[in-house]
Each structure stands twice: as C-alpha cells, then as structure tokens.
Image (tube, rainbow, N blue to C red):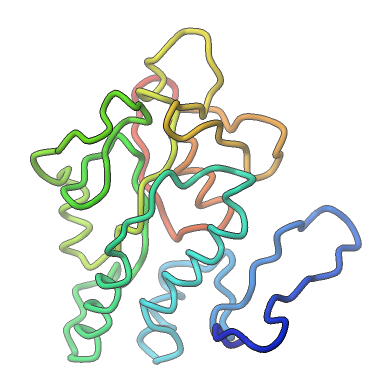
Length: 213
C-alpha cells in the first residue's frame, strides 16, 4: 500500500473477528514490517525495496497508531528524517557502514544523547539539562549507521524514585502499559524500550539494568 494519502478516505479500518489483534500494522510500501528482522530490513534496502526514510516513517506511523495505549515512546528525535536521508544518500553512493546502516532504534531516557533531545530519566527535575556527550553505546551505534529515532519511557530514575510505585511510571512519561495486556504495567524499569519492540514501534531498543530492569 502506498504511504501517500488517497482521497477521500485514506485510512483502512480493518474488521476484527476477535480481540487478538486490535492494532494490525499497515504494510510499509508493500513490505511487511511487523516482526521483521534487521537482516530482512537490510535485504529490502539493499534491493531498493525500501529506503531508510520510508522505514522510519512507517515506524513513526506505528507509534502514532499505538502509543496512546502503551505509552512507550517518550520523545521523538526531531532530526530523525534528516539522519535517515543522509544514510540513504550514503547507501546510494555505495558507502554502507555495516549491518546496522539505516536501522532505527530507541534508547531508554537515562542514556545520554548529545542532540536536540532531553535526557531526564523520566524526571521533570532534569528537563533542560545538557549532557556533555553521547553515551559510548549511542556514539558507537551512530557510527555504525543506526538511526536514533527517540527516547523510550521508563520507571523514573530507573526504579530508584521510591520503594512504592508502579513499574513503568515516570512523571515526564506517565504510565507505560504492557503491549500484550493494556491493563497491567510492564514490569522493570526499561519498560518503554521493551514495549516499543514488542509493539513493533521500532526495530530495536536499549535499556539499562539498575534495579530489576
């Protein structure tokens, strides 16, 4: 299905015979992105079936479709489209950095990124703080050609806010919910990272282990 809007009703409303699949994922320019692997995305890009820009826009569409229910994505990188376009240009010129070239990912909001995004551990107290540099893992992934698409929600301060609170809750991100049961919290402090991958909002995501993540 084309990603261009059609007239007059571009949105497809699927029929549901049961509640097993309430959020069917649209095809991405005719390609099944749901449950795809990194190797499959590389195959599609290498054979000109998809571009990095098309892939990130399809994941953004998926986030819009589902994030109001699971609350996994705390912030979207405002530069993700220009990054994707640059990586597409590199691929077209024959410069492929490696197996992660053009692959989108999220990081938990306590992993520093030196860009236009905030790094707050889910707390209002750190809003506006400026990190000195990318976390080493973020820097390595950028060098490998992966696209940092945004920050994931988490348990505030990575489970260190209180001994009595709901897993997946932060002041800045609100309450995250399990991708498989929208009535329960997801468990663990890296909740948004896990939910986003489970809900097919992103190809991969990073979390951290601090206290039962």
